[in-house]
Image (cartoon, rainbow, N blue to C red; front, side, top):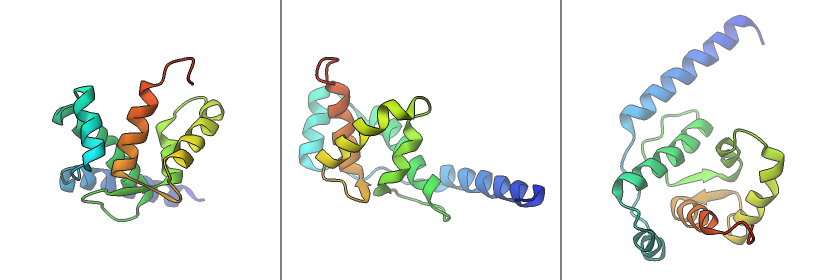
Length: 126
């Protein structure tokens, strides 16, 4: 890849990222089971918005177009959640997604439920 192509890709990525922040919609309303879990954990709107920001980023990073509302992300995009030691986390993440019934995509509800339940596991359970 030439220097011009690399620079063009960086500019396009920055423009897409900026546009994604501007046009980002509200998170989809969680299903009852997920909402019950959020309520039991005391997670309120500001925290849900933070989680949605990450979810939206995962969707936007995988798309060539600007995404207004993210309702699902490709399963492969979840690799972006782990910045270090991917080798240690990969198998656990794959198993969690399999247990959650995620085939090629992960819905907003699945994302919330799986990752909140995962964070509730004790060290022994992991």
